[in-house]
Image 1: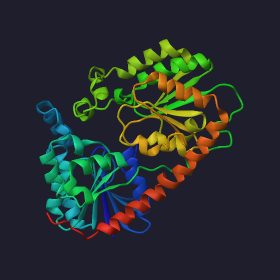
Image 2 (image 1 turned 90 degrees about the vertical axis):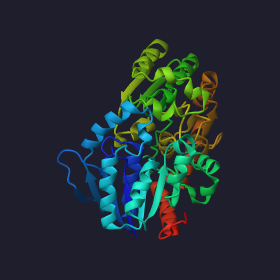
Image 3 (image 1 turned 120 degrees about the horizontal axis):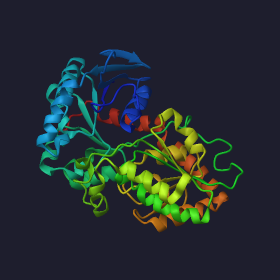
Length: 411
């Protein structure tokens, strides 16, 4: 088959600074390229080539300078510019024309449902896949989304949570909705003999992800203040960039009171306030490592006893499967896609979001029990191998492509 995967307009191919969707696209494309003709569409900057073959992938790139200027104007007149059909329209028009010339069997797109009709117009016979990594299909105006979904032949969710919400809101399209998980390199993210068993009394907990209010790191720090009473030598490693989610993307759309209560936090100073809170509550026990490239993340996991994810909103939870692949148990909140990743009581523990004492109790219980922690870490590794390896993700996707290739749903 001839397969084209269209990156989000700001993503590069190969990925530069991480980003779960750019990484997903590249890792899956590399594996699909072993058996198919694969194109990846992405942003072009500077001296990058318009067309280049890397690792068997045919990279097609287009500039986005015009889009960036147009989006500035669009965002001034609309709080939901990201859902406008003009959002990155120049990039998508270039992609659509190129796809029309290449005539792929499969066109795989991420998140922006308004781009599906643009691609469909120039590619009437292709099988179009819309892949959702967020809740927008269940949050934006139903009638508008339904028109877009009518042009998609397969609608993927990154978790059963996302897929389920889409099916519930659009029962007429439920047969087209499937789940394809995010993945992890289980060879790069792998345990070492010392993982979780370093032979000293100091306990180490880890957070990996963007520093943004909905991740609720302020709750995590409050909980770790309680944990430190029991483990005075506790070390806290917070890995991730200062990268607040735009407020219209999440808070303005959410029907969760916890998420909506965070509205005032989206002022560009959350990272600064979090550092101050950590200094006041944890002193020098907390370390902010900033943005760490994907290839340099495994040592952070291997140095930890536990991964914590206290988020109020999470479509999937990439750090969970990276930790699990490294043989590290996790403590997460009962939110979104995380409930389908963590086997509660087997590969980690799940607590209610926003409950600092419950998060502290779960964290302390696992830090105090080395044997249980090692057993959970081993189970977590097995689960990562079974469900979340890039090979397994690609096999699942390839089977869906074959099932839907050449099938255009009657509209």
